[in-house]
Amino acid sequence: MFRVLVALLISLPFPALLPAQSDAGSQLEFQVSAAQAWTDTGLDLQSGDVVKISASSSIAADKHTDSSAPVCSPAGLTNSAAQSNLPLPSAPAGALIARLHVQDASPILVGNGTDLHVADPSHLFLGMNAAGTASCQGSITVKVQKTSGSTSTNLTRGAQLKSQLSNAMGVFMSGQFGLKPEASGNNAASSAVHSGGNTAAVEPLSLSEQPLERDLRKDLDSLPRRVNDQFSHLGDMVNFVIIGSQKDMQAAMEASSWHVADTSNTTAVFNAVMQAYDSKDYLAMPMSILYLFGRKQDFGYEMAEPIAMVASRHHFRIWKAPFTWKGQEVWVGAGTHDIGFAKDQRNNSVTHKIDPSVDGERDNIGRSIQKANKVKSMAYYLPSDPVREAKNATGDSYHSDGRLLVIFLQ
Image 1: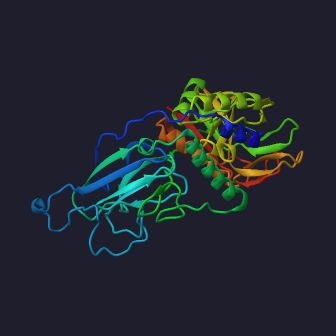
Image 2 (image 1 turned 90 degrees about the horizontal axis):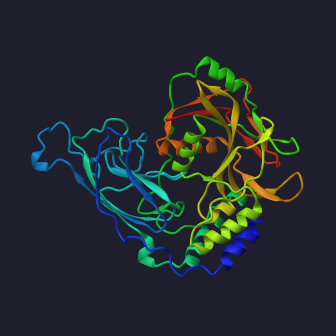
Image 3 (image 1 turned 135 degrees about the vertical axis):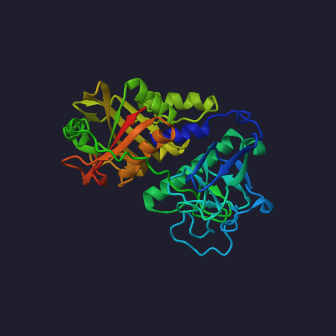
């Protein structure tokens, strides 16, 4: 099915040019200090974008009166000793750094300025290379301007698809055989951005320190730990819970860029063809039916790069629980990350291979909703009989710390 779909997409007579976009956005200005670990620029970046960043001290040298503390400089503090606890230990303390909201990436040294050439969709954050309070006075004034890469190259739809398929192959080779895709630029290990430095770290979850209420813990302990297929084979583990109305849950998914999965292969082919003719990307690959509480999932959601959806996608299934919490609906989910293909142990057919560290997808789901500002609070909860090691319904092994991520919606 997947190979047929890819071949079908490639063979379609796509329109000659991508929809026109503005060549450059307006210049944005930010004040960056150590008082806030990361400053969100609000910039969502796409493949091919170029981000020009320039920075200066907020306090002029001739107006600096406090001799006990140097002026904060985007280049960092001169003669500062290397510190292993800094976000970017290889850079001077206090230097301007950037971070992209990309999995398994690390901070980038910006200094007085740099141009970032974006390879994969991401989100820009700015920060000061400091652990806690910076030993300098003032802040850093940063100017940011984004130029859309699509208008500078006039990419054809076919060229875009070729690039997307190349990215999909890189994901597939990494997940299937442990091979890292080659990348150009100074940092060959990075596919998110090419610059003079490294790439960005993952946004941490903002977790509540308050324990869950006793009655809620009791309800969570009563939940099934794993879902099953139509043959009653146990599969993916239940690894997150969302508390909120169906309307709020669906709004949170939409705001977090999760797409509702198609329900059949026939629907998928039709939708892929129609969206390809409309010069759009197909992001709703079908999802198999699994069961919890004796019924199939109420909703299936997925997130992936265009075309890479065939080989790799973040996805989850979610069921409405048979109980409520303080009048709010409770949604029980099982999320995994597809990273390649494997043999289905039930029938020897081809199916998706999952990342065995399923806690990563659990946290990715929470992180995406947090980034969309739809989270009231979040907390981990270790149930009385946690799942640590298991296999899904198709035979893939996975492991976990056993905790549920409990998400209360705004």
